[in-house]
Image (cartoon, rainbow, N blue to C red; front, top):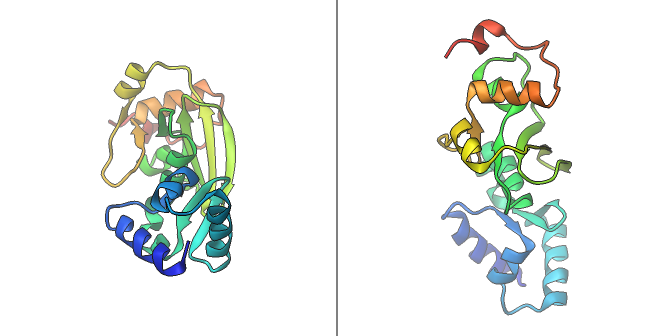
Length: 180
């Protein structure tokens, strides 16, 4: 993996909206590199600050970060749980709806059909909380929002999620919560 090749290939992919790469995707972008060569190349590109290691096996194209900072953490969450149904809920989305006054600056709260977990990245912490709801139910309770890589919970669904997982409800503005 050469610096020039990385810049050319990942810049072209950025134009299509790709800035976060699981290692398996980078193997496809650089098929000419064997396993050892790819590993050494990734280490070198991280050291040269062309890639940022966001989590184990997840890389971010560093030159694209300023242009994609808004939803970067959601792209990382997507890459961490590719086979699961994930959506932004709990405090993160309730803050966007104005239901809670505190804005979680460095934390993204995500409901997932996968395992619960906490992932600290250079771009913030991602908190996955498991849900046993069915996919059809989740589709009904969420919506696609402009610019968001992940689906987001509807306001009432996020409130139900908050209560269901036993989170603190003291910060909720109930007038705003009940306003549809």
